[in-house]
Length: 268
Ligand SMILES: Nc1ncnc2c1ncn2[C@@H]1O[C@H](COP(=O)(O)OP(=O)(O)OP(=O)(O)O)[C@@H](O)[C@H]1O
Image 1 (cartoon, rainbow, N blue to C red):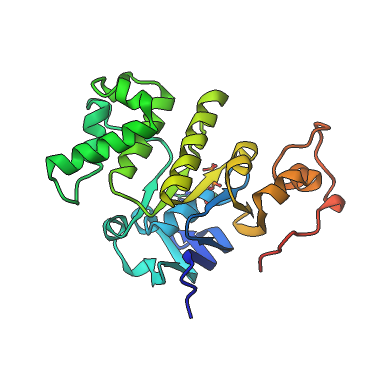
Image 2 (cartoon, rainbow, N blue to C red):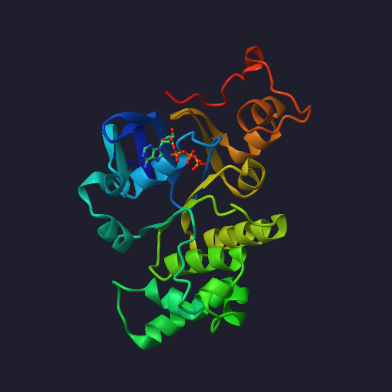
């Protein structure tokens, strides 16, 4: 019986590229409605592959899911086209920000609403809602995206996703290449959206410090396997976990494998 409180259930997925390169071999986690879940892990741990699997974008990269299941709202995502998933509220913002650089910020936002009602009044209402969350975008609405800062491009990419009225927002490394204050600003806005609208969020991050500050729960990936899961507040406080899995060793040296922590909640 699917649990109605769970918006996304990822169960022991295995994934390869070109039927040859194994990227994931046992990733599991669940997101409850209205929750922010951070997917943490080092470079190459499999975060992006997991997000693409969730959004059914792997086939476009010659990627395959070989085992396991992913259910969004109880339904198998592999049977639905990425566009249908967006219409159903599962909206990805993948790495690289992908703004149309020769369009203005506002034109970029409007482009995100394609596929739903094109009524001008409704679009304006949604734009206002997005500008209320991202006041910098209102200031830059007439500026070409290519001339805006990295942080503003990230905000535009998130704003564009919001035009699709998501219920689950899937974000890949929103902090990448941005100054700490901007990163904080973006995460604060995501938290506000989550609190005020009940938006569920799956966010992959290498910046575990900031992700754990704003997430409810976190899952850590290591070499394509989910090795640890727990409440963000618990993970944040455990020095051993931070040092071993999150690369935050204060001593500036690699912790010894013997010091590997007992799992808060080991994932099979
Ligand atoms: N298009 C692809 N074709 C072949 N192998 C790939 C492809 N994309 C990723 N991989 C491989 O899959 C594994 C997982 O990569 P993935 O990009 O999911 O990790 P990540 O945790 O998101 O890392 P990063 O932070 O660098 O994006 C890596 O070994 C990577 O080399």
